[in-house]
Amino acid sequence: MHCYDCAQSGRHESNGIGACTRCGLFTCADHARVLQTTVQRPVGVIPMTSALPSRRLVCGTCRTAEAA
Ligand SMILES: [Zn+2]
Ligand SMILES: [Zn+2]
Image (cartoon, rainbow, N blue to C red; front, top):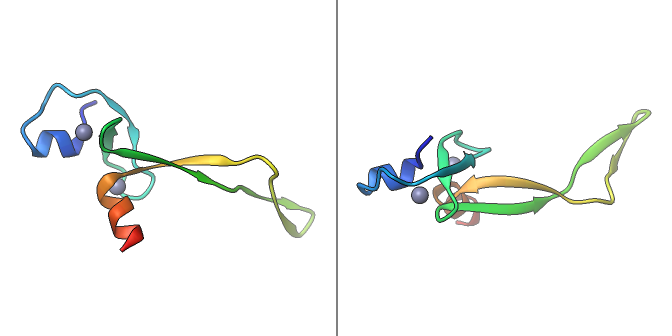
């Protein structure tokens, strides 16, 4: 799979590393942002935050939109 942002700018040889968790488009290491996130897991009926961080991949466009 090729990076959507790279394809938009005429680069069709980039290697996508994964899909943005927000828009679902494929993105490459240059355009992706890997963010730390916490995981909520239910313990009985009480949601607990896991002590270990998880991660979330978003593309540059979605990251910019989230920070705007
Ligand atoms: Zn790219
Ligand atoms: Zn995105």
